[in-house]
Image (cartoon, rainbow, N blue to C red; front, top):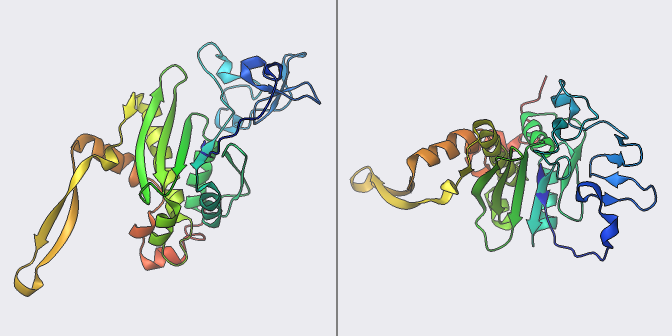
Amino acid sequence: MISFARTYYPLVSCWTYTFSAKEKDVETGLSYFGSRYYSSDLSIWLSVDPMSDKYASLSPYVYCADNPIKLVDPNGEEVIIVGDQVDNAFRSLQSGTNLQLSIDKDGKITATGKALNENDKQLLSAIESPDVTCKINTGSQFRAGEYKGTTYDAQSETAISTNNVNIYSMQGLEKTGASGSGIIHEITEGYNLGRYVVDTRKSTIPSNASEGHMETKIIGAGQYEKEYNVFVPTNTELYNIFQQEGHLKATKAPNEMTRKESQSYKASTFLP
């Protein structure tokens, strides 16, 4: 799940929200769950769960894996983008994928079309994940891209990953042909760390990407001497989890691409 979010306060009557606090459609009388409609009169879903292909052992018409006492289904699937750069962030995201994306008033991202490469495939997995939500905060107060942590909910067995993005700074790192690569990297980084948290049932992964300090190193000697900065993590174990389970499994960060990789970013690594 992934979302870009704005804040709205619509005037609605409390009676429009019924079963599981979902909004009832006034015209049809059906409860709207974001991915499908539920008929409370007939006590049935009117279409299959959109994630049913991933759970062949379950009926496509069940709710919360037939365990509504323990599990909840906020809206079926989501990636969320929020903040004051939502529109520019969404345009950047669309420019980096062959998928056709849509965004609603709450910042929720949905996708149609075929994943033509590995980048598309990872992004689609994040958007359609039933148990990982990727929240992207956008704003000029942030760095180009920064992982801010993943929280695990033991009751629902789901995780929420948060990444901050300054889309203008991010675009400054993107090479020719790699438009949108930065925000897709942040989304897929958060998604992979969310998957790790759900699979291992770790309570949280703190914001270890920014926990540490920079040190100046010197290499060479005499006229060949050169200074460079290196990040030294405070917690090596957590930093290694961030690197191995998140950063390195995500799509390439724009500043880490070779020129060849950036020139063919959108059309690269075609799936069979």
